[in-house]
Image 1 (tube, one colour):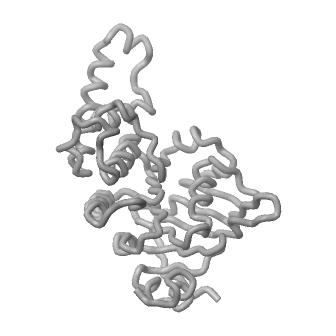
Image 2 (tube, rainbow, N blue to C red):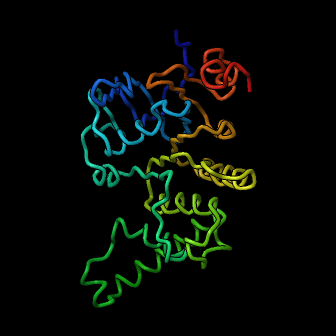
Image 3 (spheres, one colour):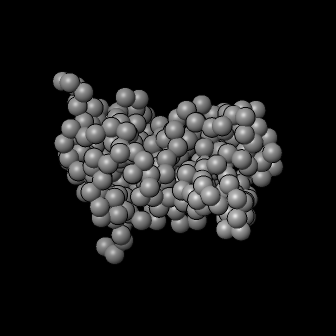
Length: 265
């Protein structure tokens, strides 16, 4: 039995909602009737053991995978079968466990390039170096500087992406996603593979996203992420087992048994 969940205030706007979301690969059900609600302005953590279906959920929402059944609604619109580029155009940004960075570009150039995913100048503007193009590039450069400062990357902005430590590369992936100006930012294992120092830095950075009012959905298995979340949604073997505040998650017997091996955290 699932306990009654504490939700957001009644007036809070629903930004993302899934209804009976199910995904099967042949006879294997990897996601079963998931009903998730994400409110505008909150950080929701999606946690579970390895193989729980967390990445499958991300790929369903972003259009990489198509559900077997169920619906996905974003900002009141049915996006269930939209292609990834159309989902991104609606304002859903995401990071990846393996960062698709431009290794030969500097940190600054990587973030500038991400801005250009939604071009504001035509090919002719670029070719003829028009005033409109120059003004747009100035705006992009200023936006890039702000993002780098917010995420603690200013001091490495001239470094090649390929030369960055792993933790900084992960944060650069976040910066690139933020540069697309998403209404919803989805972070896929943002602490994955980091050492303790990098984890502490990354948690501080993600906290700044929270403080900026951005709506964030985080998939993560590292429990240090819990305190950044307003609510936590726990899945195991593709099914929801609990939903609540971080404190409730830490103290729920089912979560402790399923996720933490019977030891409270």
